Image 1 (cartoon, helix red, strand yellow):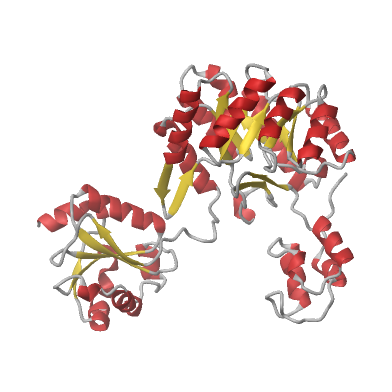
Image 2 (tube, one colour):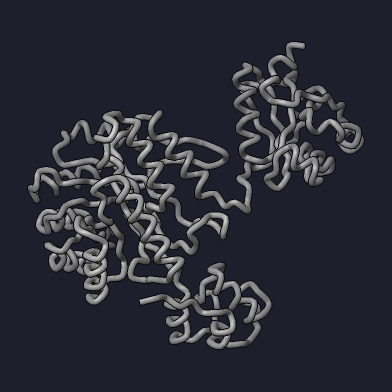
Length: 451
């Protein structure tokens, strides 16, 4: 079936036409445009009838369904996408990264890995990057061993789980151990479809569909699941070799969004560890995981947890899932680098996350103790904020006052970036501070202070 999107006038016909403004926009027509573009949900209208609300929710749902995997108060959302290319709008739910564990691992090894996952986080460009899920695989095929492993994992972490087994008995024991949660069941295929679908309904869990044969086989399984009333579906397309994996992931996304073929309108899952034999090195798992992120995978499962292999994946995911229309920003304010005191210098920069990260790291590498005054420039870099009149002297004066900077240092000297040199006099007039022009590049900060 090909999906047909409602136009704003069609949505408007179902609205109460009260123009009450309680939804956050002044008119019902304006609200209809927001709903059509995916910027608002029909449930935000307080006077919409239940019948109209149900119809609008169904008709305005994103081409790629949004699926929630949850545990004790934690949830991971995947899917919910409306475009094939980031520049068309933005991507909403980032690729979830999962570490693979299995029931052949010793209890000590599982605890060690879970402790590493708990501590594994990276602060980058004002965001905290970390893993999202754990994929627990049954290698023994023993239901009791799998249940015990699920119990051990749950005792040591609250991350949402993916339970991996094609054996319904094994899957049932794992699900019974964590009743009340919504793990992802991986996976239903043409052999176990009836039993796995029964488990999905009983435990109210999302279920993955897997096919080793062809996309057409997977489509038939999806149709049967939908016929049983199951809507929370994740797709695991045929991946017998890398070219097929990339091709199928791309076909699913483009067919669902660009062609409106809603049978394939679901998020996808893939294992980067499945192709480790390609290069014989751990770095290949990083390369493959990155490839799958670029080709629309909603979940990527891998085995390797070494920092030098995982950090590139996290950085790439952050870049892809950042809204291209809204620069990443850090909170304006005063940041202490090292252990500054009353005599320490004060440097100024903008609140563009990448600029802040580079400047702060260069200050640390220079071994300096200083204060870094971060001014709100709406997330623009130094060059762009100067050119666009966003690095305003009055904003600098306000930030100095709000941070009580004058109480923290016994001097009135402010070092500004070299690319903001033309603002020197205006900043001095507005703040009453003596302004020194710093280097053009923050890598030259150490040499600047030596001179």
